[in-house]
Image (cartoon, rainbow, N blue to C red; front, side, top):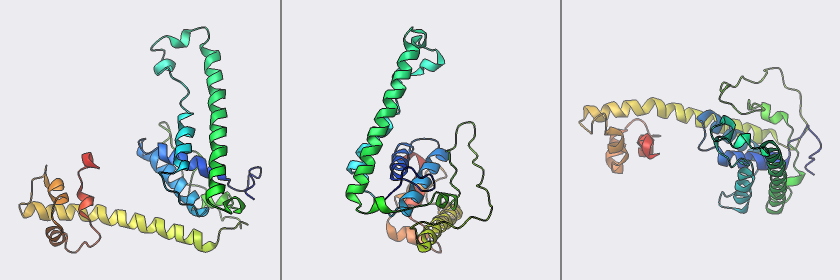
Length: 241
């Protein structure tokens, strides 16, 4: 059974919280968004878990996240509206924090129950905490003050005892490498195709991305000859993404 009291193993609550934070961080700074996306992707892979986002779990994750926003007073901490000078402010905020923490506990409990109900046997899976270190995941996400996350210690890892086959960990690493290679290849190929288009009189420096994105498939494949992995989607203007 998934042992919530054993700090050596990851828990289903951590999986649920990672899912919730991944969903809510999509509009945050890239470094924070990427951290939560990676943490969730690794955890879900290790637990062999792949939910549909339009599911009950997504609704519970949304409730968990909204329970964190317990301060309805906006810029109160900047002293901009005077609410922080009310006699009951300190007591009120303390009560709100306790209430929010209790709500998060309830929603995370329901999230774990949802996982067990929809993924039979997942509660029996043991995943050692050191698995996250294999992927260089920091214990804390980046912050505005410290956006540069230092690499995890590169000491020789100790053997771990859990239920994750080596093949699963290997496949996750290969997947990460393949995605990064594809990103780098696309990053290098796009400027070449842009130069081709401009040399051929296709669009202007201001419009060429949109023109390529809207091309018919035959013209695009001719323009992008030699770069079979490129898609018209790779040229979608940033404002449209």
